[in-house]
Length: 283
Ligand code: ZN
Image (cartoon, rainbow, N blue to C red; front, side, top):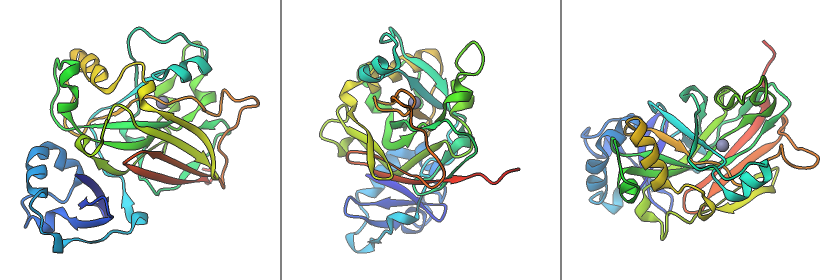
């Protein structure tokens, strides 16, 4: 099952790009608000299997909006790919490195990202959307608590990140628009192996990152085990699972995003984010 958001309303979308408005097609059984669907995920999945084929209509991918508009919690993982830890010059961590992206930074799969700093970097990431409350979940049961997967960008301002004596991940990665997510939320059963997905990103069509989630140091199940032993996770919460090698800051010379660039980001089986980089008007 694939869930998208069009005109602020939750849509069920097929792999072939056809869709239905969930609130309308369910006669009001399910809410308009996509965020509310994650609270009733099993019921939505059961209903979706019975939607008549003739009720679908073509979906214009350019109209898709952020499919998880208001998560309660957004977890993000640092140094979770072996090759990225190596390029960053850090040892693979012995436990997940966790920070937050504040929900106010989230934006849609086709939205422009307005920047006003000159060290803005890309980080394509697999984003996990939780589908159940999770407390003390074992790694082996982690996927049972996942609603679906989305493509995400953990856009990062590297100068702010490195201000002061300690890294400031959460502020540097939560500026407005620094969290594109989408274009759809795709349930884990749609993938042959959800633990091994190709992902990448490009700037102006030039590929900057290309890897597979099988390079994770901590796979999805282990992340859910670790976090859910520390605190509860709720339906609709997000985990940005870390970025692979190929960020701009560690290139020689470094490369950063600038107004006029187009950042495209993809995960196999989910789809592509297309975010034009624009200049934030001076305030
Ligand atoms: Zn990241």
